[in-house]
Image 1: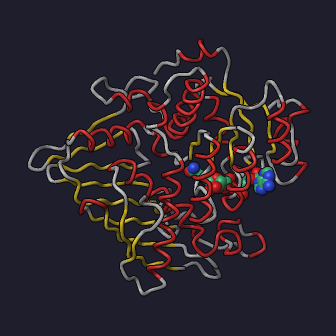
Image 2: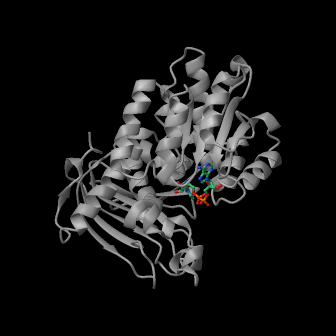
Image 3: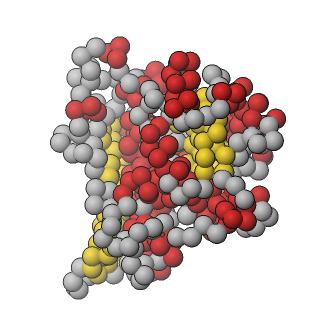
Length: 394
Ligand SMILES: NC(=O)c1ccc[n+]([C@@H]2O[C@H](COP(=O)([O-])OP(=O)(O)OC[C@H]3O[C@@H](n4cnc5c(N)ncnc54)[C@H](O)[C@@H]3O)[C@@H](O)[C@H]2O)c1
């Protein structure tokens, strides 16, 4: 992994963060990841909906006083006017406001890194895609697990034909720790992801099934054309679905299943995929992310590991340390930041940024996920009938 472009660019990419404050779940992950490779710095923030937390969070990151904001729109407007204004915004708020926040910055000529699920619903996702196009901005969606080198390796192996034609696709994210498998005693203390008022009854699909869907789409390059869905609520007193089984018909004839759950009691995280082609299969588990199993039919299985010179270029581009020195979640997440930062630098230097953008999720991935969720709802409300996925397959 080399970052020679930063010397030509002459400075780090300046980021501003909306959300991600001390009162958030995901903020710390971004703060670690954005700094991992020294390509980005955090120079502005509207880091919480709570003014005191917003100030405290930004001060802790040594953000200058005049760049600590209590309102993201003001941050977008002010940063645009500065000579040293931010290059990109990091959107780490709940998804129901992603669209509004992204719009404020994109319309001010600022690129965006946005948490998943991309928006509240499919209509907003399509609207956002149009806006990004109209403003000619760069956009990265943090489906972070696609940053793992061995996930990229899997994608490159599928592309190279190592599996032959892909037939069966299984993706799942099935967590089950007490924090997600049970409702709090006092419903007033529920996190937004368990409230129907925030994202509708499908909030948890956006939280977990979205990752399962994205990772199999990323690796296979195949889009889901039709779904049949079974959505359930198991936790007592819960108002949103907490388990989704989506059977999927992929383009080209492959068939698969996408499972998103907070009810897999005892599971820590549970993101994995298994992909089977006519010649071989691939298996990967997020909790053992340095290893990818390649299983050719009728031959011994091959345990592939991160960091070896025989791995693909994209896999090695996301790899820092020698084999056997685990890099893990934060550095997989950091790969999205580093690729996006380099894409921004390349574009500003008049070079083609596509090598970086091709490796990381963008708005099309966001639209596909929202289209899948929307179709799963229609299917479930129609007794699980096969239902076309619209909007996301274009
Ligand atoms: N990539 C992943 O694996 C991953 C993991 C967890 C969460 N997420 C996603 O990250 C996003 C945030 O999730 P979370 O669990 O951290 O949520 P959270 O509720 O814990 O934190 C949200 C943050 O946004 C702030 N916020 C809310 N409204 C704001 C506003 N108007 N202006 C400024 N700040 C505002 C809150 O104060 C808080 O700091 C969601 O989209 C979620 O799906 C992604």
